[in-house]
Image 1 (cartoon, helix red, strand yellow):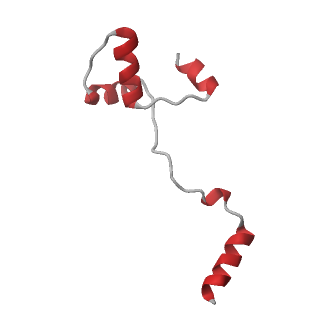
Image 2: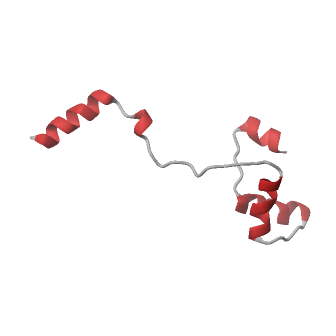
Length: 70
């Protein structure tokens, strides 16, 4: 399932996995245990960043800085 999700560009959150397990498998577990299990299996993750800095146009940024200085 994880390989299929990755190929389709689908990401899983702990709460999403919890909801899927409850709906599809009838499994009820605590949120703390739900977070612990992927760590034990070697899965790691980071929170996504809310920055668009890497997509910014440097020419437009310089023009905006110059306008702010005026």
